[in-house]
Amino acid sequence: MEIKKENRRWLDAMNLAHPIVIAGPCSAETEEQVLKTAHLLKDTDTNVFRAGIWKPRTRPGGFEGVGEKGLPWLQKVKEETGMLVTTEVGNTDHVEKALKHDIDILWIGARTTVNPFAVQEIADSLKGVDKPVLVKNPVNPDLPLWLGGVERLQSAGISQLGVIHRGFSAYNTMHYRNKPKWHIAIELKKEFPDLPLILDPSHICGRRDTILDVSQTALDLNYDGFMIETHIDPDNAWSDAKQQITPAQLNQITQDLRIRQKNS
Ligand code: PEP
Ligand code: MN
Image (cartoon, rainbow, N blue to C red; front, side, top):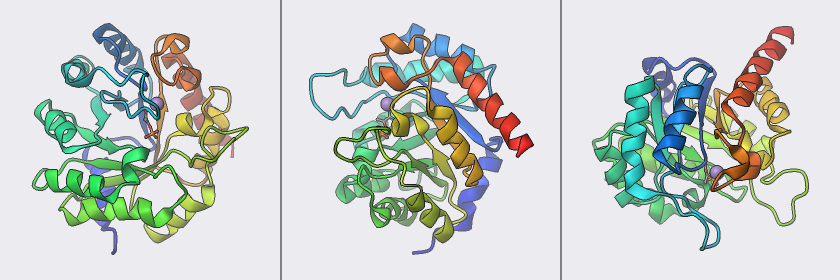
């Protein structure tokens, strides 16, 4: 299936600067944490605020997200900062609730992309609602499965699509939490140059100190943007504490990237 050209246009139509910067906490924890983070991010290059409302934890027993009560917090972010907002949807109930609360952009997580039944159900529930949807790569290094997710959404009539590269899991990784395997994203870009490609260095790195270098590689490869987990108090985050950075650190990273780009 061919991925249509209009997928590039929604970024411009929504007035999203290039590269697009999506930032915000791994999880929405409290209204105060969400709003404080958003207000600090408003003065950075961030144009879309992210927060996970439903968290797909690998093992049960951890924090599984605040659920629907967090959606009005995201609406407040929109009203108070003017940033667009995005959250992860993993089933049709999430889609229905996210749409009811006017979430601007939806994303499909790595653990959902692996399941064609789940992606198809989400795609069907979005028929007639042309919201931008970003598809994270599946946890396993499988390009057709990643593209299959995009194609299912496109077949349901969604024309504002993009992909997020968050790395691929492997047993016992040392340096990365999820290996980037850049060639898979390069292959995707070659095949579908009009599909916006966004890097999520947070889930690739699993730590803070390598986010800049991994982001630089993506910029050199002509990626269209970044999704970076950002928290007011990263060490005490309720999920993914090791990889989250403060809004000030995010600001530094995007500025450093700009300087490096100019000098290259
Ligand atoms: C997340 O973005 O917080 C998340 C759960 O990501 P992934 O689906 O890439 O693991
Ligand atoms: Mn996370």
